[in-house]
Amino acid sequence: MRLAVIAAALVLLFGVPAAAQYNQAKNEPRECRIITKQIERYGKDIERAQDRGNELWERSLEDQIVRLASRRAERCPGYPDPLATQKFYAKVIDLAAKAAWKYFTWEY
Picture 1 (spheres, rainbow, N blue to C red):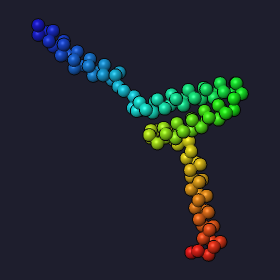
Picture 2: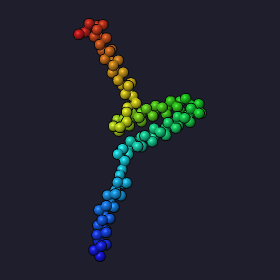
Picture 3: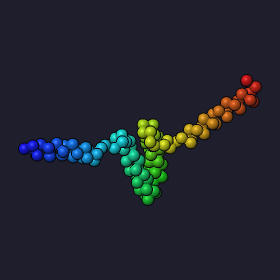
Picture 4: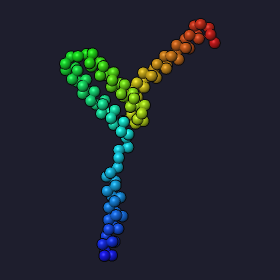
């Protein structure tokens, strides 16, 4: 009887933590995985649109992918923003326009 209790205790002490390591959830939130799968699916649909020669469908799918990638970048920190360079250059152009306005209109 004592041997069975000791064996059960050993199984619980060593077996449960060993099994628990295989039941770990992914670090990525569920919403991030869903958005990533949607982006992959729309990417495959773009190939279908190109094969059929439907430019409107292809353009709308590309726009949807950009929207999904932007939303994923906002909500999931591990993914880069696809519009980051465009946003940066928009800020640079805005700053240059303000500087030019002040320079050419003599508003200091």
